[in-house]
Amino acid sequence: MVKQVPKVVCYAVQQGHLLVFTHKEVPLAVTGVQVPAGTIRPGEEPADAAVRELQEETGRTGRVAGYLGESRYDLRPMRQEIAARHFFWLEVPPMDPTTRWDAGEPEPEHGGPPAAWTCWWMPLAQAHVLAAGLGAMLGELGQHKKDP
View 1 (cartoon, rainbow, N blue to C red):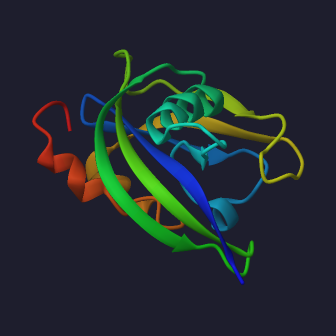
View 2 (view 1 turned 60 degrees about the vertical axis):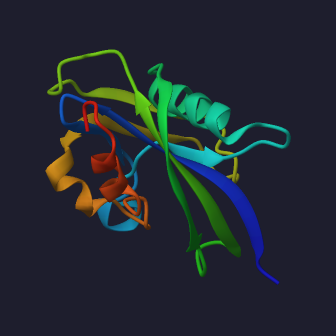
């Protein structure tokens, strides 16, 4: 039986741009363009996990501005897992949308070697290219009245 793992996906948005990243040492064809996301820890509230993942994966702080919904994503054959994803819109302090910076995970939760990536701001109109179903709730951003 395939296990379901509770996850969060973070849409950090500012000035009509979405915070994304691409891996430095793994080809784009393997990892694609991603947003901060990760596993909800036992006893952790999904909204708290979203704020934590944003900070851990990008070095940026933010606050939850809205809950966008839930979806399931089958990770097989990569991992024997169904991701039960909770999607959040996060507000972040303003910064120049042309800014790029390095970040990563020294100890990925699913195991494996350290990972490094480059964070950057993608125009929301181009965010349909997100990998692995991470863009599933982008359309929900339009339901909110602020920046998105």
